[in-house]
Length: 488
Image 1: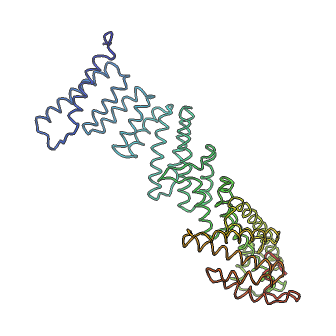
Image 2 (image 1 turned 180 degrees about the vertical axis):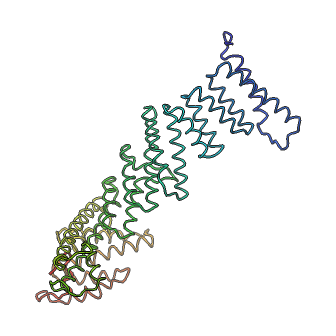
Image 3 (image 1 turned 60 degrees about the horizontal axis):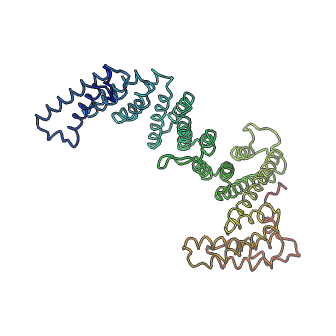
């Protein structure tokens, strides 16, 4: 009946609480294999008493969540997980919106049978009560944790991550109170899908998944779970590095350009954009040179006899269909011109990225040198700027090498960059300014600096310093000025 006036709970609940505590006390510090038979019998009596008392509580008030929670715990003390789960399910049938019961169901089922059992138990609940937001949330959580475990074990399917994302989205549609926590899981579900896609080699899909993290909320791509899921930023970095290792330089440069836009203060992304666009441009220019050489060899006429292997290689390089039957030399020349145009555009992007990098790292000898290198060797756009950058790089290198606390590796890297800056200053004078005498001391100094041998300087550039600049330039000097030139 109702509690007498002045009491905080019904007598039946007070008695049930006492009975439960009496039974639970027998479990504290117990070692069942050492307990005497009499105590086993006493324990059974206390369990039966608590079970009966809790039954009375729920009979009197079937909407009392404490009764179901305590009944479940009673079974857990006995080591009876199935009945503990069943007690919680009975309670949720009566109180489907009780968040504490639902959380206890998830935890109890997971402890009993892992994520497989917790997903099964929560799925059964959501099938009965699809309108309960917390049901979708908990099913999403258990599904997400399953996906994380699968990823750690080398899984190749992102389906669980995608399912978890849908469940969390559903939960916040049903309850605005769950929006913050649901979105946190949603953003990491997209992250997890990206890592699965990356691991199986689908780099395009992985990039899209990592980038989509920012669609959940601004800055989502920077979220991570320590020890389990690195951030989407790191995911894109891995994608870019993978493209680089596959020598797909333009695709790699595109990824790092995106990273540079996402984190404009991070010099590594901007620097990588610079050198990868350079590598992509060089790669395309080399293809164009092969096509131009083929045009010259063909003499402007369609070949009557050309091996199938050579023909197919030229068609592939020019992006022509296998059954092409038109004017082959003209088609190869057109393809070479298009490749060169694209190569020059990429090299311009490289120059822009390197110049941005110099503003982010104004004391980095290597980056400043590389920014000048692009102008000196490739774009031929602003020799005055290139000379200023090289002067800056050389001065900084001399200053930084005076430090006594440099590690051996750091000193080697710095000396190598400093030597490169001297070499590039020599190249600027020899090739771009046609002043071999001004170039010579720079080349000689870079050889002294090392730290590695510089055969290109000793075998090619220094001998060219003997050239009389008033006389026609030798062929090997002209070739050093011809990057990006079209077919003759």
